Image (cartoon, rainbow, N blue to C red; front, side):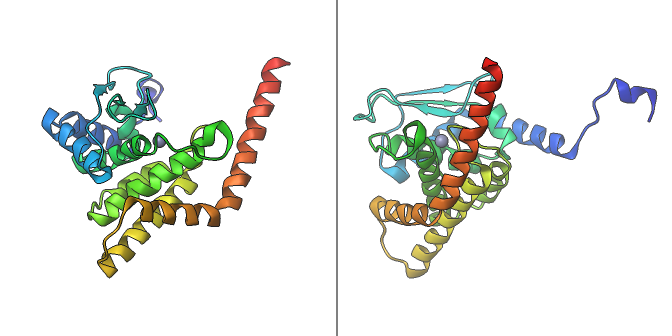
Length: 227
Ligand SMILES: [Zn+2]
C-alpha cells in the first residue's frame, strides 16, 4: 500500500479490456456500422430500420429496437450504445453485427405474442438470442464466443432472463446451426423457430424457477420500499 492507493483507482485487467473494446467500437466507420446492421437485416429478410441512432454519448442510452406499429417493418427504430456493448465484450464489427442480429430478431418477431409475464419478455429475449446464434453458427461468426462470455455474467431482470439461461439458448442455437451445416440442408426461419420452441419446452422448468425467484425479489423490494 502506498499513499497513492487512496487516490488512484487500481486498474484491472477487465477494465483494461473494456477500454480496448470501446476504442475499437468507436473506431468503426459509419459504413462498417451500416453494413453490420444491414447484413443482420438480410438474414431475416427485413428492410433496414427506418431510423438508426447512436446513443453512445448518452448516459442512459441503451441498445434496443423500438417498435411503433407491430404490423410494419417500415417504421422500426434502432438505438445502440457502444459503451454498453463494450461492457458485453463486444469489440469488433463482427461482434457488433452479431448483437444487431439479436435486435433484428426482435424486429422480425414484432408481431408474435409470447407467453409469460411482462408480455412474454423473457421468451422474446431467448428467441432473439437463439436466432442470433443461428446466424452466427450458419455463417461462421466466431465472435459469438465473446458475446456468450459477456452475456453469461448478466444478472437478469424483469425484462431479461439470467445470463446462464441466455448462454444456454445461444449454445443451443450454435448446435442447431452446426447440424444444419453438417447435413447441408436448406433451412427456413420457421424451421429455426420450431427448434427454438422445442428447446424452450426442454428448459421450461429452469425458466419458471427463475421467473419465480425474480418475482419474489421484486415483491420483497416493493414491500420494503412501501414500509
Ligand atoms: Zn433483446
